[in-house]
Length: 311
Image (cartoon, rainbow, N blue to C red; front, side):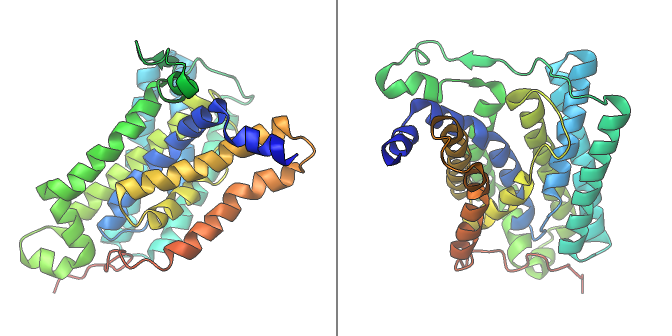
């Protein structure tokens, strides 16, 4: 049995699945990174993902347009991010509690809309795989299938990692985000609008969370059902801590968690003698362990979850 598990770990199909399954984690975690670097914790990511997943799915189901599906997910995600920003920044509500409220709203509303307008799960034609000419045919260690045979949203998610790192570390906007998250009073004294920056980052984070949901419903699974995300939004929040609020650290964490997911799916097929309960709970056990290590980090923004009161 041990040999079977080791063989499963090194399968090219597991590596390819790891990259595909990392997509929603990357989108949601990068968006949450932007928000947290500006000082706002959004625990409603999972609910926003569910709403993005439903609206993206419903748009494709009714129009057969993948572009409209993506736009619908971005729009509803942006709206919910804007609502979270209003609650947290303008009303200065407790961010943890308000985030859970956003999550519960997304969970309930996505299920209500699905039952009202769809009823029975129906598959849609999602994003097809795009093979990179000259690279997808690489046979060495299965590199072609592992890296160069995925749908468009997979490539977009991985491209966003260096783009987000560049914005945060090399642009004036990134400097403002970091300043607002570390010392909003000093940023305000320098003429930076703390409110505007936080609104922008939380709204952008909502848009990416909506896109993360759509990557599930119209790119990976091509269907919508109740609680489609199964808590992936909360894992995405944990990945921000695990990655030390840095895009490349978030990418590393996303790959780790998606690898665990891919492995437990493969083990369920190749090693049925292992109780399925152990495989299902594996990602959450890894989450707890990762947070134990992340709690030792000191890179967190000083003003995270702290409302800004202009003096």
